[in-house]
Image (tube, rainbow, N blue to C red; front, side, top):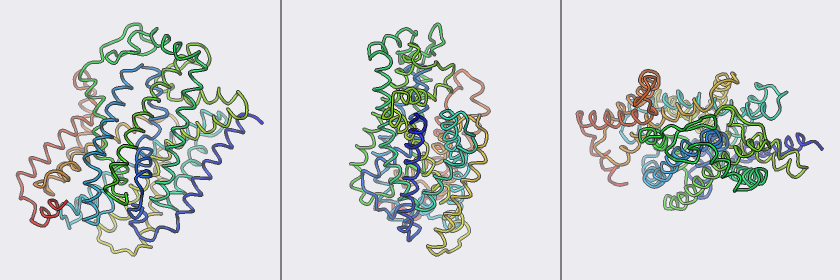
Length: 507
């Protein structure tokens, strides 16, 4: 039996399993809370692993190894440090407060929470927040669809990109629309396990193929600055540049994004007992550190393999993102069992993308069906009606995202970086002030969302191109601007009423 057949079998079993989970959970959605938040019934292990699987996306199995392969330790490591710190702090200071506060207010989405937190009956806060979600999640979801399409076309060159992308999108839409948040969470738990298996299988196979760990290290040392945390280099550089303080801070700023990611924050609200979030925090944080560290090492191992001639070398950072695909293709030539393991690895890459796309689809759909229709236009819907509309919204948003993903040459990680910054700046500061500053009012909340989101566009397209000291990841300056607007506008406008203050103090 050919290696491609074994790989197809492994991937097909995985995709069918995801759809089966969606079908199994489809009848458990009785209310909108069930569909959007799993009825707040998730256990700590499911919350931990589904949260992190939804967070990592294809960045874990494609972006990190590719960056480490082509640029060495500095860029990849400082990014990972920032993400690991952001992950831990989000669990530590946001998770429990948001779970308690959202339940008290009866909020089941992030725009819902902001609206109830500030007593905004006009629907303005909810409408702006929902609009932010739609603006940034549609291209974010599109990048996930595109990554799935690129995976299959890299693996099967004769396969149409559009066909591969649409099949992947159809599976994601299928189990999301049927099973809602519960199905997305259970599939994300499974996907996190598949992702972990994929990383370790590739790691051990790669080290052996490269000639052992000592050979990997010696090969890395052959490139000036490759193993330094303070050198800016690539495998094509003759001399390393300086990886300075500003660059480090800018890179680590990725971690700020966690405080504003709706598809991550929703998982905190979904746990069955807020006291168990400590367990989730430990499991999730440990998994993130281990998985991202292994992903960096896989990049170094891949470089050693290409230097030895075991696999063909990559000529650019973006091309190097297919390192796991290329190693998997090599592994599949060693027999039936290795071919099945290669299929598991490729399913892991696929699952890393799907686990993020499903959470994003649900968050975007909730923005349309729950926050805009109910919150902004004040249309009362029965639970069955809202769930039906939510399923239609999932389908419509997926169609729009697929349209954006139709170009196989689109930059997947450029889109991810921009959308991550958008959510981090529009929602991150507001989430922290909402949970920790009772003087914050609805005027400050609106100013913070608008200024943070607007600064992302201004900095990205007008300021950052100036280069030099201005070449800072747009999330950092936009986050600061949003904080300033929240504080200044809140202090210059009337204080929140006593009911809002009492609700704040009670949690």
